[in-house]
Image (cartoon, rainbow, N blue to C red; front, side, top):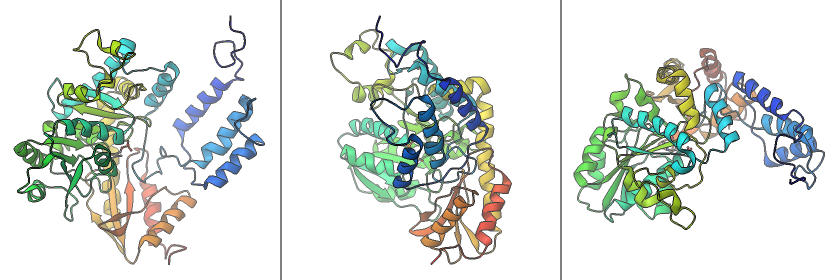
Length: 459
Ligand SMILES: *Cc1c(COP(=O)(O)O)cnc(C)c1O
């Protein structure tokens, strides 16, 4: 019997840590305090103050001090992306059921890369992929895997696209595409061919045609099913026509917005996605799962396996059994993988799809109400009518500095965390609605902050 292992087993003394963590999770699900942004030096001092010195030592601090350091120095010095007052970037609003299942996934270390190891987890995750693929209108053989996020999802899909682009190095992509698309192209040695969008921020088939006219070197077309900055869905059906015409791979980046295709009233805005060769949607965005989850789906998963299957003496055994059952690790650039689709699978199993639709709809309704109110505020003007959950707006006389101090003030007053943005080079306000518990009174507080005088610190 090994006598000196202090890390494992039923007998170790963790001074009630299980209860501390359970209480923490319960409180957090009840309410996520907005938190604050801090400098590295500030938080380093805070960590040391709680630990009375170094945190990481040879001997360890023990449960009580380590937990106190986490609670007092880590938690409050972090912005709560899961707060109903977090309206920046793309928020997260994980459902309670998905959070608890995420904890269970951690406890069991589901290494869900293969059927051999994790048939149960893989089958459950695949039910979610099938639901999403079928809602998008892809054929039954469509499939893929869950990855850690949209960036690696885009990279993995575009690697497969490259292998099927017939050696054509150019990728037609809107000027509104997410930054991870550009970075993926750089990593893959592909060249972006930028398709300009007009005032409505929507990539159209006509603009795409104009850009590729006369060229024979475009092998991939990328469109957004909900762009990040303005939340606009590109003209997917016309773009699919063009891609088909030139025999290009058609990838739809739906990391943020494609969850909204589950809503019958928005389904037609996504028409054309059923012709995608690949698409992604992040459960950790608008499907209310915790951080670390992207659904990556291919029309023909075998094409992905030809690119991503890893070979070696220690992994070939994963493929011995049955070539027909491809593994999650064959579809993206990741071998060991957390079963990051299980939290969503569980929440869907518990609550059903309709509860998720309702929660998505709540964000869209909030965005529309906020847009109406902003449009009616003197000196404020909408940049664009929201199509999903993003609201972009201008205020007379405000530039980058004013928007920055406005955001600082909102956070300092505990009203909201918002991050200014730009639209066509000009500074704008940007709010993203996703958390169903964001209230109209929060919108009121934000509108009031826009109306009240010049922001402190404005130049
Ligand atoms: C968020 C986002 C990404 C990147 O996803 P991560 O999960 O943050 O890596 C890619 N594309 C779009 C459209 C996004 O909104």
